[in-house]
Length: 558
Ligand SMILES: [Zn+2]
Image (cartoon, rainbow, N blue to C red; front, side, top):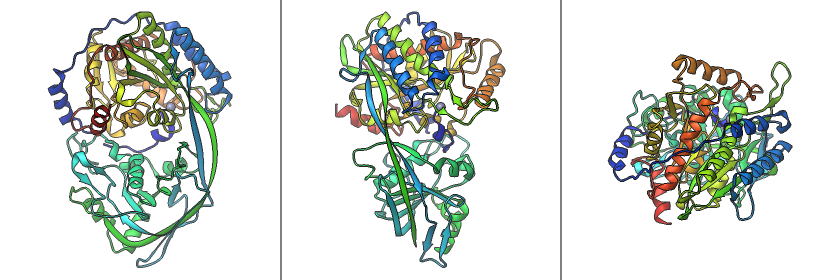
């Protein structure tokens, strides 16, 4: 799970109509019967243990730990019988850049009833996605664009009829359904859609040509306090390098405190609360605030290279159609020390387990013989810095995304023991749910929806990088309804992991782990992927899902 994104927004998907659509379409899908071979628990144990030894230093990109990880993975992929997945190479180079804003001026607002000035840190934060030594926003017209959403499939466009080129857009966090109890509404009610995430809001502002985008922080819909915004948005920010150096991005992206926004609106003769209410309506029109903002800062930049590891098992009859397995190999490296002085975040569960699973699955697939479609095993880098390795692959695909049938992401196996259920993050989004149900059926297990869809976990691990480009991806985790101890024991185990190990130095290999649950989940991962590799169908996003239109376009172009 990603660090910064885990601290990030929370919001609302659209499930009800989607479920109906799935049922309507199910008759058209052929889901083949699949027999799973024995999957090696020794491979799981050995690789999880080795990747999480202190010698790997927590596997931070660009460190000696990366070199060791790449060497181990390529050796094991090759031994498993895979071929290098990028021509003759096992690697895809992922050029990364860190950009840190320094000497940030106050944000000033002029032209209203009084001149205003807000300090960097306590009142506002700002950063840049552009590789520019100096950023200057000077007397830029401020425009309130509500939730900053342009969603043609919902007939919703907060930018309609207004030109924001070169201007500073001010945007509400979350989406118009925030506060809804049910899963019904234009934006999926309580469940989060991508339109609620801050990443989306900055992307849309850039597409609209804005010079700067400022999100109004509000603790409830953001789901975290200003302290989290302030700490995670200061210091170096990591991005994948782009050919144009981020020239198509806004110059400045930031957040402002809610009371800062209230003062800006008041000086512009507007009432923030009234505008927040108006923004929930479909007919909302963006408001030119009639005031101008200025802010400037310097960027300190440094570049480094990291690598995705990619192996392929070529399909027997349709090798140019691909099924994807993804897991991130990276973790946090050296981190805040535990009381005993241990400062290596070993990332045994997160995500040595998922990385080991790629190897164990590769072995199982070659043992069973190549399926009809090709299987791509992709271990991605820099997930913890914001899904950067998977984003880079999805933007620079080795195998065409329109020819990629779908995929399965594995991030942090549950070590709680065998469970009656798996938890699907993003259940109801695509027809892959039907493959999962079929895979679980023979084991007498069930798929349950995640309990907190408003937290938007679907948008927080590597499957999302592919979903965003239309590839149907499924992500599920071991459930908490344990065969021994039931939900009470399962919840206690998850709580222990979250509170005592997650993203800390104590996420370490434990020789006493019971691997039975992991192996059950791994069998399910195998079965779902193998079914996808044997069917002739192309499962899609359900009707109304935010990724459906992108997929339909990429499929029709292939
Ligand atoms: Zn993580």
